[in-house]
Each structure stands twice: as structure tokens, then as C-alpha cells.
Amino acid sequence: MMKFNIYISLFLMLFASSVIAQAPKYSNEFLSLGIAARGLAMSNSVVASTNDVTSGYWNTPGILEIEEDLQIGLMHSEYFAGIAKYDYIGLAKKLNDNSAIGISLIRFGVDDIPNTLDMIDKDGNILLEKITSFSVVDYAFLLSYAQKTKIEGLNVGGNAKIIRRIVGEFASSWGFGLDVGAKYIKNNWIFGANFRDVTSTFNAWTFNTSAFEDVFIATGNEIPQNSLEITTPKILLGAARKFNVYKKIKALVEIDADITTDGKRNVMLKSDLLSFDPHLGAEFYYNDLIFFRLGVGNFQKIPNIDGSKNFTFQPNMGLGIKFKHFAVDYAFTDIGDQSIALYSHVFSIRYGINKKAEAKSLQ
Image (tube, rainbow, N blue to C red; front, side):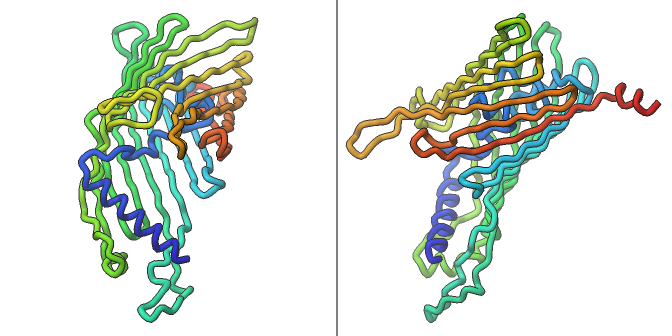
């Protein structure tokens, strides 16, 4: 049980050191995981081809292509053997033929973490009744708007987002930021660009030091101070092409690249200023009814003790079924490298509503 004291101390120390820095690496990284089974099965390679309610997350102009007047999306997944829960709900609505709006809510959290800070009293006695629990939760709320331009095939859009992060009673933050995106369709080619945190996203952290100050002083840990965390801009680029394979069988292949500006990361191409993380996805579908998806990404070189490096990557796959206005998607992914085999199952659904169809059913 005493290990949890160490975990809490290290957790808060990491937050303290990161927020004091002006632009820590991997800030708000939960927003880079991806949402919905289609995107995850294709290794997040959907910035260009996204065309449903989930476009509010992937690339906002895509919500202009929803097939119904209103579309709703839901997702639930669990990571690390169910320790972490990841959920999404979204809504997209056409305003007219040229514009659309959407809202998205994302939650990533670990619940029921034992808090053993008060488990041992000053005399060394273990008090099991003093053990409580807390959650570490990240929330994101995205308000999206997309608009067609006067250039045929070119659509643009953007997000205003609010970030809420909570570490039990110990710390919390509010963050605000903007995303902008563009999408261009020409025949069977589709190009997409999403500029996340285009003005940088600012998270203001507040620490409730009264909840852990005594323990930190007794153990010689530094007391964190309220500060500001900055998420630097990130550019997501994608190019996709559609193919006719055989009669009613079609395919779509997309290659994307994530360009980060927070310094050198362990990705395929990197420098002291920018890092480039490529990933590839493919989708095969029959009569717009049954879908099979593949993806590969997260290319890394992992150093060994002897100085050598292993090349690793993350494979993903998934299935989808669409019937009229209802769709169910599934993704099977290994979130670690192939040797770790931390497999996760992701399910998501979409449902569309047409006002005209509803009106006819009421007559």
C-alpha cells in the first residue's frame, strides 16, 4: 500500500515540473489518442477522409458531409486491462447546404485510485480505514463549425475547445484553445489539414496543497505552485484516394503525418524543433454496407541495454456495418509494441436523423 504514497507524490511532482515549464512536451496528449473505431482501426489516418459526426474531432470540415440532417456518435473503450476508460459522444447538424455545426465531449480517466497518504499515522500505525479513492480525469468539450467556400471542393472549419483536467482533490486545471481545418476533394482524391491548438492552448493549473502539504514536507518533496501549461501547435496532414476494386467492392487508402512543435519526439523523423510521425490506413467496403479496415503507425526505435535499437510499430484492424442511418464500428488494436501485446477493443456507433423522414412518419 505504501507504494501508492510514492505514486501520488511522483504524479504531483511531474505535474508541478511540467506546468512550471512554458511548453511541456505531450501537453493534453489525451486529445491525440483518436476517437471512434473507424479512425482507430486505420491508425488515426482519417484527417482527409473523415466525413461523419466524428469530424468534429478529426477535421471539422468533414461534418459538412454527414448524410443526414442530424448525426449522433458514441464510443466506449478501455485501456490497460480496463484500468483507463475512454468515452466520446458527439453531435453534428446541418444548418443548410453550405454550413454545419457540431459538439463533442471526450472523457479519459482512471477511477478508484487508492489514496494512502493518511494510511500511516505519526506513530507508524497502519489505519486501513483512512484509505480513500480518487480519480484522474481529462475532459474536452469541442464546439465545431464548418463552411463551404466559393472554391469548388474546398471546405473549411474550426473548433473552440475547453479542457478540464482533474487529479482528485489534489489538482485541477481549465484550458482553452482553437483548432482550424481544411479539406479539398478533387475527383477520387481527398486532401485534409488540421491545425490543432493553432494559437496554443493554455491550461491554468491550481493545486490544493492542503491535501498533501504535510506529507510532502515530511518526505522532503517540493510543494507545487499554481502555474500555466501551454500546448504548442500541432499540424495533421492527410491525403487519401478512392479506388474501384471489383463491381460493388471499393477501397480507400490514406497516408497521414502528424507534425509536432514541442521538440524532439521518438518518431520516425525528428529534429530539435519539429517531429514528423507518419501513419497509414486502408478501408475496403462492399456496397457501402460492410467495411474492413487496417492501419499501421506509431513507428519507433526502442533502445536496448546493449545500445542497439528495435524498430517497432503499432498495427490496428477493424470492422464496420452500416444499415440505412445506423452504423456500428469495431477496432482491435495493440496500444503497445508487438511484444507487449496490450490489446484493446473499441466499439462506436453512429445514428442519423432526417427531418423529412420524421415528418413523413408522423403523417
